[in-house]
Length: 216
Image 1 (tube, helix red, strand yellow):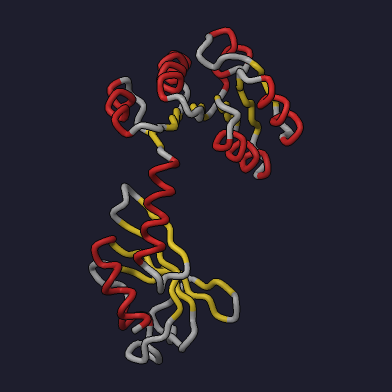
Image 2 (cartoon, helix red, strand yellow):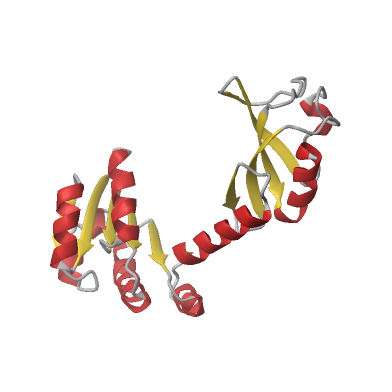
């Protein structure tokens, strides 16, 4: 997959590094020479020191060949303008970073559906870690209306029960179980033992009850 990223700051650089590590082709566009130098030293990718809101720079990056374009600068206006420009190249997926939630409607109006706010996402994640102290880890999915929780089984009421007897419910389903460090896709007849770690897909409004069921 070929990905063009505009913005060589923290978000853009980390994203580019992750994609390169997974074997994807990446071009990074950044107009700050210092950041370009940092990116060139850290990434096995094409670095273009230029303005991603300029058509010539985008064409230099062969944006018309891209599978994904990501506007990842900290400037909402620049991200919006670059997304508008690249829409003419019919790129399959365009993603924009958003710093100010008030600007989301403007992105939606021009047809940019994938709008991400790392700051808001991080704040939401931290809030959930604070309010869910018995959860080892979590992933927020969808539009924040569901989560995947990693929980260690401690409640004697479910220890010794079969997974099929407690999952799925209308609000949750056990999607993975770890025994002796090995991940297994759960089957209905598997028995839960004390200390087993399980991953549960759960609706956000039911998280409190599910955590209570597993750990009380």
